[in-house]
Image 1 (cartoon, each protein chain N blue to C red):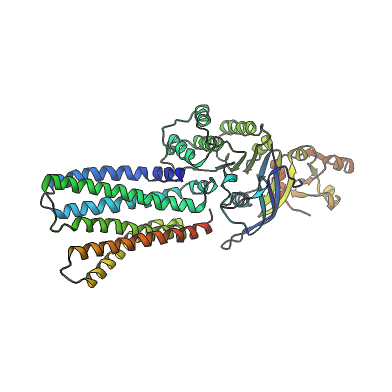
Image 2 (image 1 turned 180 degrees about the vertical axis):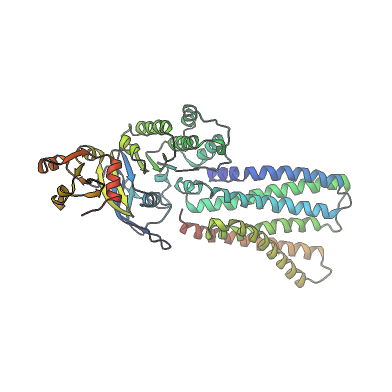
Length: 218
Length: 292
């Protein structure tokens, strides 16, 4: 697993370097001019969380342009471990995105004060960023191994839109369950339910992807 | 070549059909003894890569048995894969990586990864460690793949068209590395190639494939010392015993006939010119020529 995680890390690294530089620069920009512009911070937090996850998914595609995907199958690892490492890597990159978001919001609070109306807003932003990323991964991985290489770009886009769509659908459902004037506890409860759904979808996607990958021929 | 217990690889009645294509590997059998090099020969689309993919389990065979180190390899047999080094034609690794990054990944994947040996190969092959692979030439990329395969300290090296597209000097250098590798009697090399001169130089056994079927499986010594090509005029060709003809090819003024025993043919057909057969010529006769 150690080698596979290193493999995934180096595969994503070129994209992640560029994205990290962009995240740092845009973070500085948000902090510099973001006073009273909470939408900038909202955009930044979602961008870094979803963006790092997206980069990790986009990086995997590059393996299929060389013989490396065949090489991995010849390495002393099980096919299931290859898939598990991809899921784990996406979680690690999501954690990196969440850390960037956390640092930026913490600095924003220190420099400009709390930028949102409600105390639960930061939590809900994390729910959105993490939820969309998890749904996106849950959709992408099985499609990536099920479809041919030539469809990777469309699957990547589809999983981003699909992940966002599932999150929006669940949010709409929560709003329907708890009409206007939700208490903080209800907001946190709704957020937790969305997160649980995201985690379950991500966890269920892993054995499904393993099942698909076991049949895959290179 | 009989299949024996002292084979590092045994392939028996291997079949594989791709549903979306007409190609099928059809009951192919061969074996690779310890301490030797087997060349898998055939024109493009003959089934060399399919056979290798089945051996390495990257595609699933339809039927037959493949035994590596005496065992059939399943997905869970990671200990067997630990003993196999693989080199493919073309880009073997993500091109954004450096050799140094590759080494870190390999170190995590292979328990027996020998970093000092890898460094030695990088130095010997003059490969810059911190340059991205995409900036390597084709020869450098191939050398890196071979360095990475050997630094796992494998017992079996599987090379799928690994010398294709290399210049003669680089090919020669790499073939010497393979010869050095099999100096250890516990090591073997399975080399697929359509560059028959490479096989002529290093292979101990040659397996010919055509259209997914095995057409010949011989030791190189037999090829060199027994097989021969008769240069026949039309009338001489018509007078030949069909049982003596393995394959023939009509040319402008003569017909080349491949025979399994050149000495016997020389005794039987005293007025016919008989030459030693090169692998290249045998391959041409077997793939392009007619058969009785």
